[in-house]
Picture 1 (cartoon, one colour):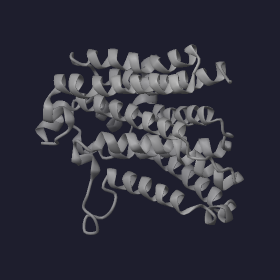
Picture 2 (tube, helix red, strand yellow):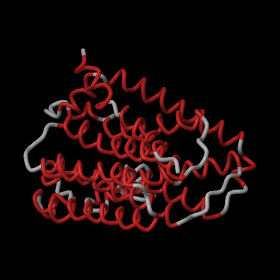
Picture 3 (cartoon, helix red, strand yellow):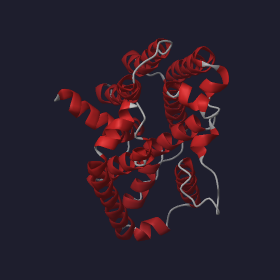
Length: 304
């Protein structure tokens, strides 16, 4: 029974919705701004789950695949269709409600907010190649080296930009772009990018067969770990220590924010050995949840 629940949560991408909420709460606490409405958090749960599940909705075409996640989608395709319909409907209804009820606030948005939203929507749309091929034939998932940066960018926007835009629309609260905000955005972007590259290790053999030139396919698993993942994580830790020193963060706050980086390095080393898909979905994606929990806890324990 426990295994079925775990597969339901992780194979069904419901954990992804939890990650979106957790990262948004972390950024909200760190920036010390007001929380958005419950309907907004419901929206950012439903939308990522439906978005990520979209890639697997055609799994029935690959019924011979031994991938346990694909097999799970094949077995539960009827439920997933209903779930997709429900989640998409909820997301659209909430979006329309927020759009109509805050229409005047939307019209008053500064132009740079519109630009940010358009860039994020373009990245999300092109990631799956959702535009008709005759109109714009580009699927960012197939660009290989660019894919993890796009994923990291979308997640950073979801956590650090979109909530502020919605807050501006709802209450007129405008957050001044500061060095702290920029640092938080880049930190989320790079951390989620590292996470996406670690996920590419899982698909190394498949991507190589399909000639998809990801970091892992281009330079190999070992070099990806030692020449990309570890250096980027070390740079992240050093930048954290430098910024924390300048801003005079308390020791406990620094230590809590370092925990995800240290554990991610440990997990990166573990990827030398072959891991099953649940390891990636629980442990590697779990690092993002851990980051959000540590960042939120650091603020709640040390509000000053």
